[in-house]
Length: 405
Image 1 (cartoon, rainbow, N blue to C red):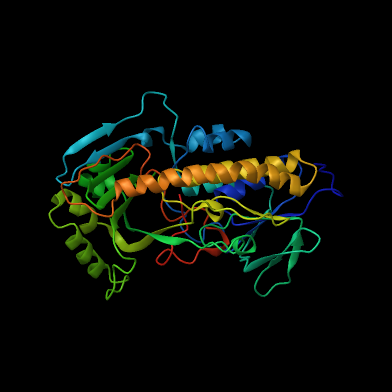
Image 2 (cartoon, helix red, strand yellow; image 1 turned 90 degrees about the horizontal axis):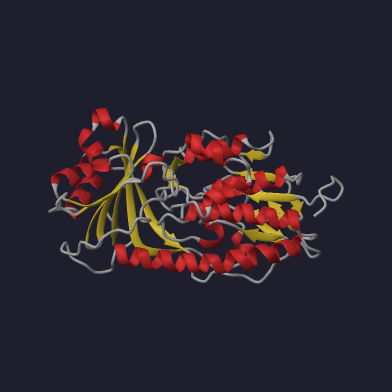
């Protein structure tokens, strides 16, 4: 595609998550102008979530494509590839550690990855405090982007990188996320090695999981002595009925009841967490999720293929962003670029979503007792929950997760 100023397409990306930012980075490296619309008022307005494992075959491919792989490695934690599995009695069932120099899935804090991507963009690329409420196709191709209280703008291509509750998706599809039957309730620990040595021993340098039946507990070490903790269980979406989620003591008591009979060192994850609890019911999009071509509009990441958080979502978003931008650069028209991009992205996402759904069903089964001590595969619980492509339309962590994967 010609990239002279007179011929360059006008491109808008909705959502400043990893996939959208990486897409913008590829476009700018090839001289294609792009604007990213983000509802957050500034880069530091909220915490970006926990740790991500960036896979060699997906996320790392995307980072190499934009010349950021070495910078990523400098920020990553290869030791975070360590993984421990316990039963409900706190007996260590399995312990995996990465070999010296192993870089297949090094961890990085989501905030650090986002900053890396933001710093790689030209100043002014992201319009902070610009929520998008809808996108409508134009009769001759392209799309109109609508923002509350601002004049609509027209673009040759609008990319929905705005997460689970995308405002771009309705221009392509009637699909909406549905509840999986699994909820995760998050808490955290700071300065864990000094203030919570028992938790530090459980989690080690990476991720720890304990499971019995349809319940699990998860710890993930982040940088700076920060650990995120999750209680994961099957149950109705309104498991907290009659309970104010802002009542930390009440939520803690209900969770401790749910994990009655577990070893006290594991119950300390619920008992000693700092701050409040964040309710994160897990949602997914239908599989397959596809759409009839609408000229000038497409999706990437969770907006296109929201799936359970089993170590896939952020990596696919990065790869989607790289491949979409490359298709725009390499093809003479936007329509040809979308043909090339969607013909690869949609089938790939179906395969990945099916596998992720099966894995979730195996690991947190619909029925089970405390004697069901199934092992977690290596990939499970290594992708941050609740933050994937938060973008312009995050409805709030206590109501809806914006992850995926």
